[in-house]
Image 1 (tube, one colour):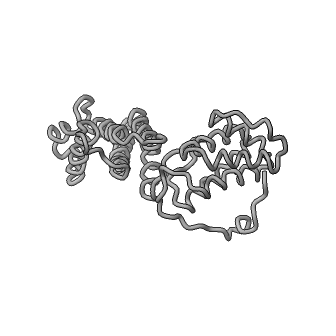
Image 2 (cartoon, rainbow, N blue to C red):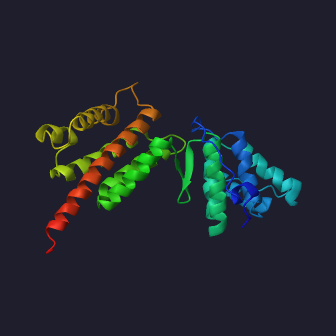
Image 3 (cartoon, rainbow, N blue to C red):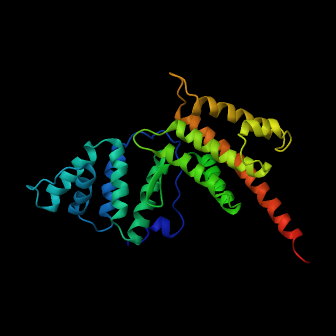
Length: 276
């Protein structure tokens, strides 16, 4: 594993997160940086060719024997000419071939490149997922943690599926992301109210005040929008990626609030049962 450079070693290096402007693309700079980060791990062009040819399902050029410049240029051509989503497939395939130390170094380098260059992806658990702004990332991290603590596994699974839908390549599943995020919120709301069958819309009507105002109004409006855009889609009115991202972000934030409330209620109940 390579040693840290001077600026990192002395805590001097910092970088500014750039606004996300790139999702359905793999810029030329990223394509070149992948090979740089890979070769920095003391790997050879032939190692990378074994990966690119497998992912792209093309045979290696048997006329290329030398690492430099022949195989090196062959791999460069693979990365430069393949479809944008294949670039991210190659990144994932590279990670699978590395040992634990190499994975950490390569992942950190690529994730840092994404942040610095405004690319809306990130590597998590050896897979590439969608990346949002700081507010979105905080909401997703918090909701998974809170739902785990509240032991709401179904709700946690639903929000993760929403994230997976946003992360699909080459085309994100926008309606799927909306549906799963709504299902997450529905699961948590049912648990808070104690009605395991009603929809969110019905819960808000049947149990006024169960969720504090104006949060209950926000839940009702989200339900209406998600039902229209995620379930009863009309021709020519497909929701956009940013709208789906917003729904996932807002439902996550509300689910965090409700999950924390449920955790407090469970803790109070447990304390009542204590004999001291």
